[in-house]
Amino acid sequence: MASAIAAIVYVLMLKPVTGVADNGDFLRIMQTVGLDYLEPEPDDRDKYFGYFILEYRLDGLGAGGYVSTQIVLVFAATLLNRLLYSQDVFDIRFLAAVYTLLLLAAYWAAFRFHRSRPAAFHIALGILLVFLFTDAGYIAYFNSLFGEPVSFVFLLLTVVLALGLASAENPRRGLLAAFFVCAVFLTGSKIQNAPIGILLAILCLRFLPFRSDRAWRKTVISFAAILALGSIAMFVFAPKELKAINMYQTVFFGILKDSPTPERDLEELGLPKELAVLAGTNFFTPDTPIPQRDPMLDELFYSRMSHGKVAAFYLKHPGRLLAKLEIAARNGMSIRPYYLGTYEKSEGRPYGAVSETFAFWSRFKSQKMPNTLGFLVPFCLAYLAVLIRERRRAANQQSKVYIETFAVLAAIGMISFAVPVIGDGEADLGKHLFLFNVCFDLMFAASLLWIVQKLATRFSGRKPAASNAHRGHIS
Image (cartoon, rainbow, N blue to C red; front, side):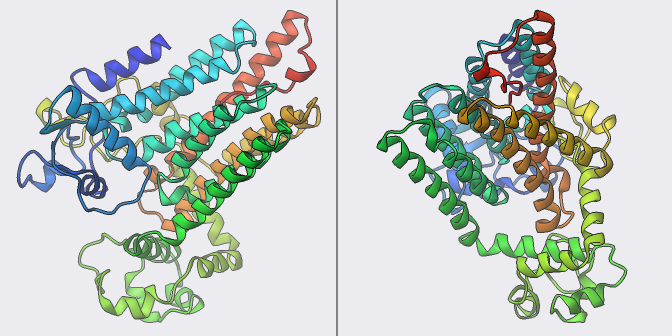
């Protein structure tokens, strides 16, 4: 824990401070929580892509209307800032501090719920938490207004708390409530995460047999229902503008991008062939033959398209789907968006420079780890095969749910891998695959810890107790 704190303080709090530059997404958060730039009209080059901004002006609550659980955390950080620093200037390190506390809570819980493990297991767990999850590729997002750190810390917390529930002999409702709150924050952080709520609702229902009292069963069912309905509501009531952006990029920067027959594809989707001139463009491409917000597109495109049509197209053309997933795999091992700078402009670094301080794991993943379906598919199959084997050997219901939690993690990873490229085309894939990276790293860490647990048990000459025999994984 001390090593993690030292790394976070060094990377995020001390000069030169590491953060992540804005790609244009920050404005919706700024407008909602009441943040603005210190300079009245900063140059776009200073605002976007090249440099990260450490301080913002504090205004009153805005009217941006952006709905996300991220708003709660940013607002809490602004209150902390007003209390301890300034009523007028917001230092984004207060937001980093909020995320850091949540991350450290996940680390503490990971040790707390596995305190009976061998010393070798605890050593390996500590090394992996610091080396993998305190990497700058992850924590640099803490000094930003992106939604990625919300997904990151709350996925860790949700998984660890689920493992804690499955490890307790008589789990408390307070622990169940903590799991539920973290699951809500995870699901509600981004529309992309909406399907995750369904998986977590199913996992929540698996907690039903843990206690027989009526209050427990009622609470579990209520939490599961809220998670499922909330996920559906997130998608149904998503802002129209955001849905339009996603659909445009799904078709023109997804299906039609690099298509040998764009006119035929459009015809199959029930769209006019004249729209083929937009093939390969995204919603933010300037000077397109037909502007993205042209009212003509409402009639010819937006009103006619649906995700059902997209799914049907890919089902009819599995080869095209496989090609898109291969593209996702090529981008799937990059935790951080290298096109976004991580230094303040005042540091005098080149425009778009990216800090490599405490970035061993993210650098290794992007440069050395295979980024193909030929690596990812066998890894996932082997991972799931071990889970199936361990579940068959599980001694009781809670042992099975413990293992199923890791299966849910794999399912979240698969959704996070497929949804961006199918649901948003190839736009900004490196950042959109962020949650997949978290899932992969958790699965990778769990696999290593399973091996450590097996070796420690074998060399100690002792067999694990029946109720603990399954617990070779950890988030």
